[in-house]
Image (cartoon, rainbow, N blue to C red; front, side, top):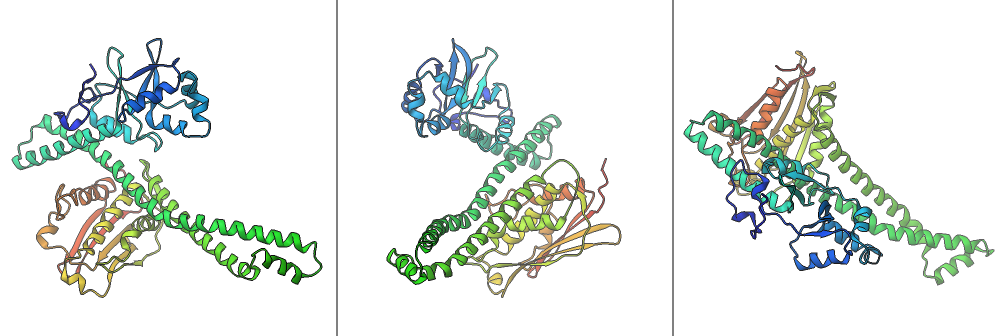
Length: 457
């Protein structure tokens, strides 16, 4: 049976690692499709937390309309007038909303993974849950995320305890690993959302620049067209110029400023194109197939995405990127996974150079990250990423690639980035990942992978 009860917050539930959707509270508000559309508005107004309403016809399930989709349509011109007095069926057929139905015995972790994989238009839509007796309820997406977070914490705590005991039962270990891999994928999707938010911030400034200047460009063009039309009627340019000044048109200023305005708009558009192209390349390469790719392109795309972290801050100098690229052939690899390795190592280097409370870093005249690539005689390529930070102590270097090991404060790191990077380079690509560091002088990570991919058994 569905969890139809008064609990509105999953924090009150006692969830387990294997908990399913059946344990989460759902909404069961239903309405027949022959009822007028304004009754939907009344139901939503009566309960501000109601995520959606189940639609039925002759007491049989038809579909669902969410709060977001309903008010989005009603806020459009003539939306209220078109559908408020008509049967809900007209609105439902017009919108044709995509509905996601899940059985109640679906594990919460699996359901979260599926939900996060939906398109950006549907990712926040409520989920329809059904049981064996074909009863239907609506699950709020945010409640699902809270439940997934609880299970994530439970999983990490359980893993830590089992690791300390060093006596993990085989059956439990398989269940934990299964949960763990799914949680990693969920975290990746959530991190991608944060990444997109950062990119959106980068896009916002040039976009505002373009839109702010477009109005002036339009006015300038109107003024020029006015002058052209008047020029055809008057025998003298000076007369036209005089009439233009009477209209408040400064032709000399327009002639001087219009090229600058259009040039700045072009610069903004070019910057947007670079950001969007980098994000697209970074995402499209994240595929399961082995493909020949340009390693330098992957590094540059990663740097563009991290560009806002390289800029100067009140308590830190700008981080300079020094490139020493060799001529490399196209490399057969899982390009998206290697991009993740570059992201992890470069992000760690930026963090190492951003320790504002360290006196040694404050005495540095410049902060640098050096990226070197080289084609070796044994048909391998090496990528070296080095920073001039504080370096890593020898005892820490021995544990760098261990799962869950981190030197960052609680909440700042999971201890999984370098462990996952090691698996990608060594286990996935048959390569090598190593770290060379002298405390006080900096740190260098070396990635070595074959040019031609050899499938590992």
